[in-house]
Figure 1 (cartoon, rainbow, N blue to C red):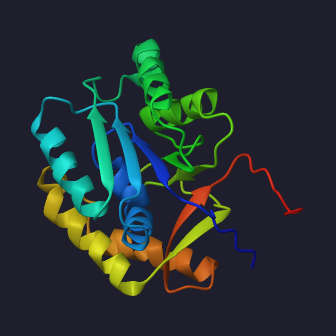
Figure 2 (tube, one colour):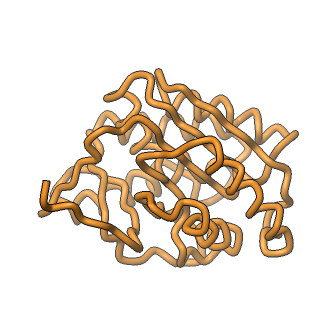
Length: 215
């Protein structure tokens, strides 16, 4: 098992196509990082849900998922499921985000996610964040698109439980979905934990990684 630490982790970027994407895909990782580094800056971008009840859900949720962090959240108003038709607007939002931060870590959707909004946002990230570590998170759904991740963040059992609790508390608009439940979230975290010799974990896909083994 190879472990790579970020060294100095002062700035994080987290992006999602929809409200709740970041929390589902990387909520445990954000909890872990923010609790370990009080005051870490988190710049979050969500492309849809602006001006609706979902935006308020997202603001309260990410505040809880980033305890003690300097959280800066922007929520846009692109229509759900229509990112390909709003490509220029999405690209401008990502580039504006890049213009105001130089992060040590980027959390984004996977490039092979079956949802067109997730996939489109993922493919925009390398055009703006060219020299950054980008971790592609996964979101369980009916498409059956879960793959073979190659990066893991182990989660303490209490962190995994807190992630599930916060998801249930802060996104009441999603509770009716058949996959949005404790078993789904903890079950996937348990499987990913097995894969990295931990109890629970979140898993990511890294498409490009530069090593510095000389220092």
